[in-house]
Amino acid sequence: MGDADHGFSDFNTIASLMERRDPKVHTQSAKIPAPSQAPNSEDGSSTLGNRDGYTTSIAKAPFAEASTKAVTVFVGGSVGCIPYSPKTWSGILPFLLRAMDGAGILSQAVGIKVPEPWKSFLLAKNFTLNRAAWRKHFYFDPAYRRALTQAAKPVLVNSPVCLQIGSMFSLPEVFPDRKCISYSDGNLPELLNSGFGMEGVSAKRIDQALHYEEQVSQQMTAIFTFSEYLRQSFISNYRIPPERVFNIGGAINLTDIPPASPDKDYSAPRILFIGVEFNRKGGQQLLDAFRSVRQAIPDARLDIVGPEHLDQLPAGAVCHGRLSKADPEQNLKLLTLLRGSSLLALPALYEPFGIAPLEGMLYQLPCVVTDGWALRESVRPGYNGELVAKGSVEELAAALIRLLSNPEQLAMMGRHGREFVLNSYTWTSVANRMASVVNNL
Image (cartoon, rainbow, N blue to C red; front, side, top):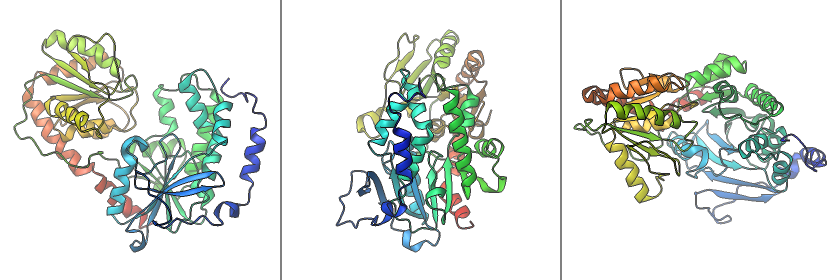
């Protein structure tokens, strides 16, 4: 059903005609408006008018002219298209852009999206009653990705390097004379290997998306990844030469680094979980394990942040809903939970990187996480937390009980975790590693 045309049999013809249009039509007068010519949006970007149906958000950087290897960053697709929005790429992009600006390598940040009526056509074409499958069929559709690529054509790029977030479009096709880089926190082969999140998605769409992502990856001058595990995935699954794939890492999304708490008290057995996608993050496994924890430690408490509502919680578990850092009252509540907890648990069924544990470590929280993906790179057993087998409720419960019963060990792990994050997982360090690669391309 997701691959049916649903009455839009003429869509491929329309899309084909759109793609054959003379590129000059798109770029003829596609100049970045001066500040006096274009109003600024709330996120600090400017808008490059609605040219040929394509609306592009552009934010310029003050260091662009001074840098000999400045980078133009493009974002679009499922991660969002407003560069400095706190929602884009799970809130990552604004922090990355500011760090790149500080490192002197950011020229401009551009958000692209598929315009109407093409977006509506594609939504209708890929419709299925399963909303999650519908979303993936839509974003996996090669026609959507070609249209998203077309949306980059009106952009005037002066920098020698272009960087795109993810692999949902192809900058090398639009800017063949530029060095093009992709930056990813995950990829499709790893999502498929996880066995999670593909329910109802047709094999045809998955194969199309795999082919497209591999093709785009092979076109890149270089690929940046959040982790070594993901670097190896691009090398093995997409046959990218190792010398073209760089693990520059990822980082915490915090504007201000909280001060250390030398006298932090770990005597209260309080567990913190942070994750909007409760099931993917292993929330149900944590609830099952927490029932065993309560039998061993009757005053144990589990604070859950992320899901709007949860039913039938065990005794001692509290759901706080979504807590936005942008809301002062909600942010204060989140900070109170971070400061008052003894450890953070994230027994994810699939978590390509894992920012929540890193932020927890800043608050000196040891982390109990799944032994997989990039989590095993950020959590070292016995040093700043523990690793547990994916889906193992028994192993998770045993690790939680063991750590909560040893406040002295928690305190040592908490100190180690904070030091580890500050040394390796800040956006400044990521931007510096990025700059080192960019300046040698």
